[in-house]
Amino acid sequence: MKPALAIVVVLYLAAVAAYAIARQQRGVWLAQLKYLLLTAGAVIMIMPFYWMLITSFKDFAEAMAYPPSWWPREILWRNYIEAWQKPDAGFGRYYWVSISTMAMSTTGVLFTSILAAYAFARMNFVGKGLFFYIVLATLMVPAEVLLIPKYIILSSLGWLDTYKALTVPFLASVFSIFLMRQFFMTIPGDLWDAAQIDGAGRWRFLWLVIVPLSKPVLITTGIFNAIASWNSLLWPLVATSRAEMRTLMVGLQVFSNESSGEFQLLMAASTFCVLPIVIVFFLAQRFFIEGIARSGLKS
Image (cartoon, rainbow, N blue to C red):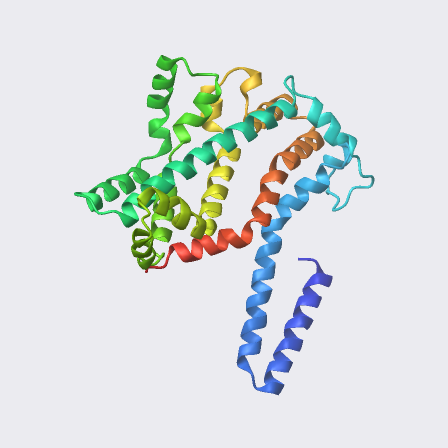
């Protein structure tokens, strides 16, 4: 920590302590200390993103200089243009593949999770508890264990290097089923009784009552799966070989290997690869927190 910053922090803590002693309010001191620790943690978490962003605007010499500078001498927007156009297929194609696979896999996960979660939360059938625990047990299986079986199956079907290989294995999610099931259990059962009186069956009740009331958990599930699809690297790297079928993260990995010496271009590419999913998260943050909070409650 720089001496000037250390002095500011010490003076701030001394002022807070003096105020707390004068007011005889111990909670003020503890609250300010908590906020200070949270602020320090937030700064530590943000620093890598800040460093990535400012480095993307530097020239090669400044990006590799030591000691590093905390702000570029000149903001070079052309780094983004060069990074965007540098790969053979181009990041525009990588974006299209990533957005397409993310949309298809997220839509599929939402549909299958809604049906499975409703069955486990609202329907009674023989062995429901056993089946539910068997489904949850699959969470204990590492994804790497399933890598070879999935590859063999898709290879025998002739689906490698296609959108099917990037989406079909991810059309269902056990965690999403569990999350939705917990949320569905918080919805009052009296609504089902009222729907039956109105002549609605389970299908209409699910789509006209349960789903509209479950917007927070649906958005939360969508965010989880969208982020997972967007950041997926290992499976797309195994299932695809053509440059036209590379996802954004695979394209970024290839770009990193080919342009390892151009650090400023790599940071520019990393920035426009990460930025869309960060924006989506902040726009839907309220629903994300609400969905997580309510999914832990019971009716």
